[in-house]
Image 1 (tube, rainbow over the protein chains, first blue to last red):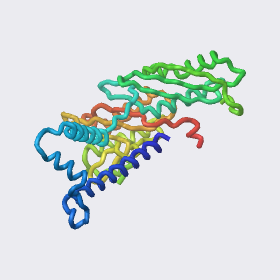
Image 2: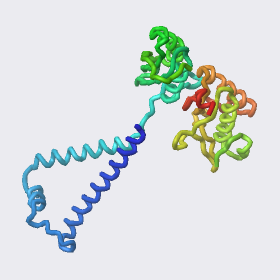
Image 3: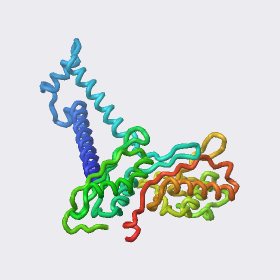
Image 4: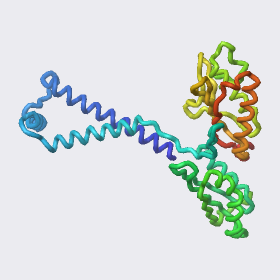
Length: 186
Length: 121
């Protein structure tokens, strides 16, 4: 879903930039070749505005708008070109090298660990990694049948994932709602 | 062209590429390693002389050594001992190939995990 939305944003951004470039090109051509193109800028609002800009005195409003546009353009360029750093969970760092894991891989591991716990019918892990290494939050939503007590399942899941979560410095929260009908204990 | 074993790398190839091929083979031979992952865009690799070793990044360090990053897909095993096993195997194979002095730190990056449910498919 997120990938789809990202793709959509990129496509819309690209189309917007193309439209903006064509509009700018149109204005430039109209200003340069107004006679050949049959476009009359003279006497128009645009023409009067350009004359006022070229006139004496400071045009504070236009300067602020222009400066803002330049700044916005620079920010957009930085946003588009700056490489995104993927946040990774670091398990060990030393002279021998680093051991780290991608968020997705860890999430899969926690889900699998929780699903193999007795009394769990379905599990879903959500992992948020902090900016500093060995900081993050793990939320496990594990569904249970009516016959299993919430506290028992919570403790069982905690003991199953505790070692791995502790190694990555993750604060763990386990939610134990009742499972949907038809889901069976693994 | 992707390289899958050190035997496919000619002796005239760069040391960086030979080391990367050796590390790839060593990692794949370690129990608990399901595969190596070059990433969606294939950026995690070492390339030289028209050859490419996917999933291993070799970067030169001062002093003629190379830092190696292994990007792997792991089975559901303890990660710390998996990394130790990968490092031990890489160091042993590098020593056997006479490249022990060129091997720097070995980073292990777990890119994906193969869960039992996926393995059954």
